[in-house]
Length: 216
Ligand code: MD3
Ligand code: FE
Image 1 (spheres, rainbow, N blue to C red):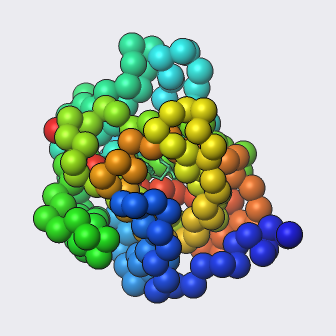
Image 2: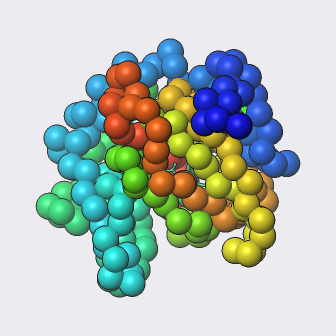
Image 3: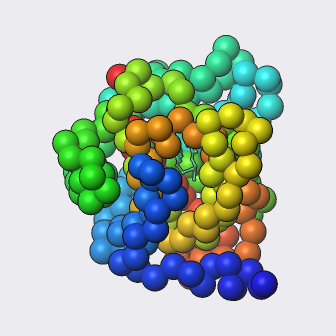
């Protein structure tokens, strides 16, 4: 099987189930990509992408920024949500309306009505960047879903189980795809394989992932 075969299975408009409460909405964000990219540029000027340190003292290969009331941060003391950008001590940029509307609509399309995220993490991958297998456990309320939007280069998402050692399966994520995780699937281990493959026509050798959560 070639890489192309792997990335061939997704057509805009398709809904692919990954678990009982986990769904990929193929191409769901395509109609608002221009507005999303414009808003991300604006956020980057006020709270620039940066590589954070893990509690273990390693520099993350993924660069990140945030918008919304609460932003996810990491340093030697651990992972936490913060109301201010630790780079300059000011609040994170407000969540643009195009972001919150997309998150609400995608959550509703997946069966989670009334999703009002207060946290939006924006991850930037370059070729070779990866996110090792982890759980998202820093949020207060696990009953709200997580909504994520993929932009730019395609990536291979690893979707494991509730234990780190459970076998993980691979799900390709493409430009414009939106994924929604709720219920028990919300606490499954997951990660992103090292970014590889051809550059994206619009974003070059970059992948941007925008993740919405109810953190507070
Ligand atoms: C599955 N981000 O920021 S998509 C993260 O593409 C993160 O940047 C990846 O994992 C990325 O924490 C993966 C989003 C994602 C987020 C939360 C999840 C997938 C999830 C929680 C449970 C299961
Ligand atoms: Fe995660």
